[in-house]
Length: 123
Image (tube, rainbow, N blue to C red):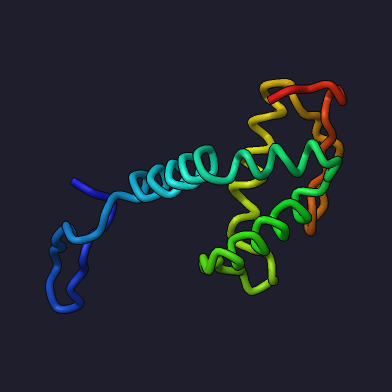
């Protein structure tokens, strides 16, 4: 049985709505898609930006948007102007923090800053 039900104003009972997916499966699929997509396609670009000395997650994301636009790949943006890719870029960077390749410096509503643990870090 799923979490959704359909109510009828004129009937005391309800029927489960089997056309909607479970909330948890949607969340897992969305996160898994970002992780796989970023790890295989964009991780190398983010690694290169880090090697260039870029510390801003927003700047890395903006550069990635420019590269994708050159390849005529459509990028979606939030109403705030921040690219949807910003979230998976931060997830990828946080993964590098867990692997002790990066250090998380600070974050604001607009950006997050990271730095390499060592200038000799190799990928």
